[in-house]
Image (spheres, rainbow, N blue to C red):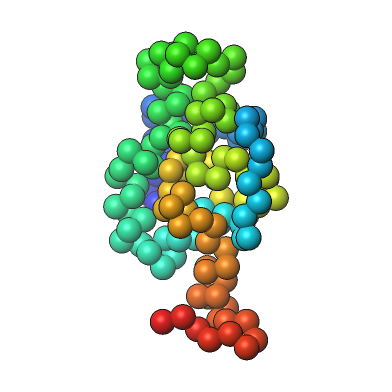
Amino acid sequence: MPDERLFESLFREVTGRPLPASKFENPEPAVVPAARYVGTRCAATCHTREYKRWLGTRHARTWVMLGMAELAAPIRAHFKLEGEPQSSGTCLKCHGTAASVPDTYRADTFHIEEGVSASAATGPGEIRHRRHHEGPEEGESRPG
């Protein structure tokens, strides 16, 4: 099974339903990054070994875990959540990368459903990804 289908397959297996397209509330003011978040599949083009290792971690499944009734129910009660944990800004602050940024700062290749990715620590990767694949902008030297 290709890596890009793995997450969808795991979600379906765990929840018994297809991966939903999520819209979620942002309880805090939106953060405006200098570049867009591109998602784990873009990172995997250069960091394949790290990506595959990440797929086996709990970080890759944090969003899925929010949809598991037996795990989500006590959390929903503790935080007095009205809606689903998978669409809660309160939960996604920790269980999803870039949950508090506006949609316009997430590239089409980014999916909150990927859980906690390296971008949670490094920030949005659009500029680094573009520079690596297209080369530096005029007057800029290539890092390395």
